Length: 178
Image 1 (cartoon, one colour):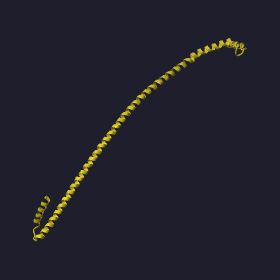
Image 2 (cartoon, rainbow, N blue to C red):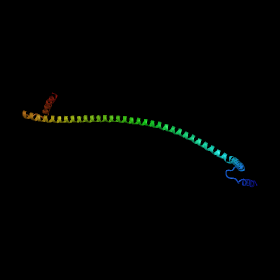
Image 3 (cartoon, one colour):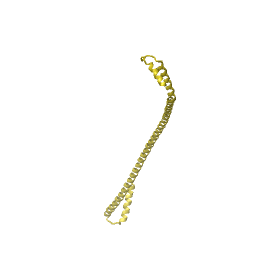
Image 4 (tube, rainbow, N blue to C red):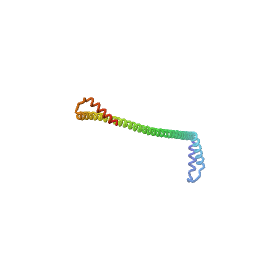
């Protein structure tokens, strides 16, 4: 019934042009707008505002978490830089210790090499001295034999070999001392 009345009011006044003002249409449009606004306020406005508030809170929490994560990342970065500096210092110390150790080892190897070469030289000198002494003894023995033979021929008499050896050795020892 209300709809028939509304339809008749609208139909009776529709004789005008588009630019004509129709007070009934204005009233019903305003009334419909108000009713729709009240319905939307009750049904849709609160959920929309609630969703917007939740979204705002979520964004605030995300920003807060991002700031905390940034601070933690900065702390971790600072710790890593400190650890890197400490590791570089330790590496530098290890390298310096290695150089020092290598230098000491080189000096020790050189000293051992010198000691060994001096030992070899002294052993060689001792061997040479022994060989010289043996050669001298052999030469002395041969000289004694030659001298005995020569003396025997010169004296034309035969002395026993032991007496000749003692006399010649005595003579050679006197020559060596002088």
